[in-house]
Structure formats: C-alpha cells, structure tokens
Image (spheres, rainbow, N blue to C red):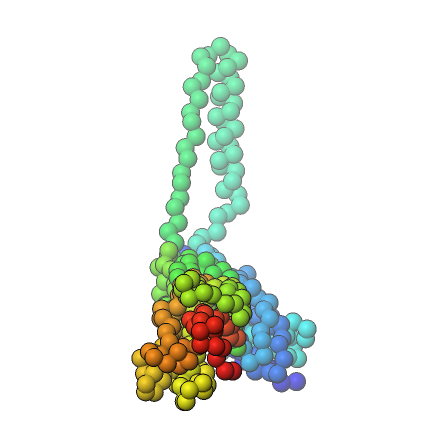
Length: 370
C-alpha cells in the first residue's frame, strides 16, 4: 500500500561538535484528506547504532494538508571509530504497520572525528582496590599499635562545567505556541516576543519566526514569533441600545467586552442627518459614503476612533441647522466596533448599537417625522 506521508530532512549533511553531538530535523507532511497520528523513527546507517539517536516527541497528530517538524538528537559513542556515517528516518501512521505504510527519507551524512576512546581493561580495577586495602591496613595498625590519631584528609572535589553548544534553527511554522517553546528550549533558546495576526484558518499556530530555519542559534538566544488568531466580533455593552441622553449631558462613553488576542479596537460612529426639503418635511438618513453634500458638508457623518482599551468617546459634536430647526443632526448616533491584531488588521465587526441625544425641544418644534 502506498504511504500517504512525505518526509524530508532539513539538510543533507550535518557537523558534529567536539563531543560528537549534533541535531537534525525532519519535516513530515500529511497530504491526505484526514488528520492522522504519525510516528517517526531513525534508521541507523553505516558506522552508526540505534542508541545514538533520540527523537523529540516521536508521535504527533498531523492535520490533513499540514506538516510537523521532528527534532533528532545525535550522540555518537566515544569508542566509535572515526569515519563517514549517515542516518535516515521513516514515518508511518501510529495505527498501521511500519512495513506496509512507511515512507523513508533521504540520507543525512555526517563524519565521526577524533580518536576513539580506548576501553579500560576490567582487570585494572584490582590496582586501586589493592592500594586501598594497604592504606586501610596501615591506618588500623597505627591505631591499634598506639600511634597518634591520623589526620583526616578532606576529599578533593572536581567540578566539570560543560559549555552549551550552538544549534541549528528549525522550522516552527504550523506548531502551536507551546510546542514552539518546547522545541526552542531543546535547542537552548527561548521564545522572545509574540505578535498576533488575524488568520482564522491557522488560528493557534506559528506563522512566522524571526530566526530562519538553518541559521545557527547561540545558547540563550530568543526567537520572536507571529501566531495566528481568530478575532471575534466584539460584544457591545454600554450605553444600552436605544438609550437617550439630554443635550446637557454631552456625548456618552461607549464600551464593549474585551476580545481575546486583540491588540486594539476601531470604533465607527455614524450620526444621522435630517435634510430639509420644505417646511415640515425633513427625512433623516445615515450617510453611505461618510460625508454630506451642501448645505450639510460641515456636519459630522461618519468617523473612526482607535482605542487600546475596551472603551472610547466620540470626538465630534451634534448640532441643528441654523434657522431650520427640523434640519441638521437628528440626535441619533449608531456605533460598532472592530477588533485589531498587532498588525492593524481588523476582525469581524460587531452589530450596531444606537443612542439618542435630545437636541430639539419637541414642545417648540414638534416631533421630527420618521
């Protein structure tokens, strides 16, 4: 049966450090129509052994059409003979048999350098044991034969510090933020800043990384990430829909519930204008273009306010047309809110809420027609 997987190494050759250690990545793609759990295992090549290789998270769920990057740690045995070596990897579904459904990657070559460590003969342990026995016998003889108390010699403590080694950056795209952090920790690095981009189909996964794949990481380096989010329409709170305010109260402050993942908000205000036709007739509408024609060109029609918190205040005034009480702003204002990501992209809008500011005196001019 043909395997549904595709697997490719991050490079065709790696270099081991002085301790005969290194890392390599394999990217596995699931081109099939359903999500599947994949298992990656290393295939030892010439001059290698299976116990040299350790795979981080060898079993992963890969979404259909998605990919995952597996990190393999290499540590050659000290007694391994110098010379060329290689490894490969194969991937197969966790629910299937490797012999029937696996895919094998291209080879990744490396060289084992330095002299092989010599094995210590098991008979050499006799020498320190014999020396220790002689020392103990001498101390006991000294004590029982009346000698002076021996002066204890404090043990010598030797501390060995192993310097962290550089590592090659891997592709983090498609990983969750938590998975990316774990991979970076394994490379001796850490997550730096995290920015969010509105991208609902990829929500929760890494879209970009500040350090490209294959670049060398120094111990302690940080990597900035761009993570996809799906911004929700804000839920409007206050003032309640249809609320009325006296002109002396001024314009109310509007508020809404915070949206997870939002870096800010854009509030759209639209004010209604009544256009005088003849006495007693002044139909009221909201502008579809955000502006009015003569003689209402200096009247507010539509504006936007940027906010970093979940509240904002209108930055315009309402007024009645001079000499024509039935014309000008009606006092009705409608507003809606868009959530913004860290790059200024807008999410879906909320619905409209409306409030009314009582600009006219109904007893003096009578109510406006609908």
